[in-house]
Image (cartoon, rainbow, N blue to C red; front, side):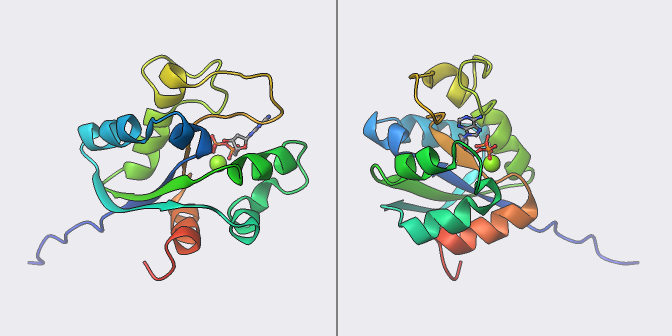
Length: 146
Ligand code: DAT
Ligand code: MG
């Protein structure tokens, strides 16, 4: 008989973007992550560099919102977070809500606290990795060696 194996702890990269830091919402956002039951494994306030953002947002290069997105992400500090727990990748995306804050469901971070400001990029408070591959790639960008 084989022993039951302990499932690998899933992890994700969360960013509280510069709008969230400026508006003083980092505590409320981390509160929701912790209240859901996920564990904070690393938290670090960083001012992103152009190189870091080019790697992080490589999939969006060439899209009309790419330049405004990078400019926005350079506009102030970002809180980078590694969160852990079974299902945390999908679970945090669910807590975050839809990309467009106008239609993000009430009860979600974006639905409750973000809106359209008439700008070329959606200032939607948070980023969360969208797959295990993205999570590992993005954690290496924001937390080298972790
Ligand atoms: P998400 O952050 O929900 O994973 P994404 O990866 O498609 O969304 O896009 C990354 C960011 O780029 C998003 O958080 C805000 C901005 N963005 C995406 N689509 C946009 C659009 N159509 N207009 C303006 N900004 C957009
Ligand atoms: Mg994304």
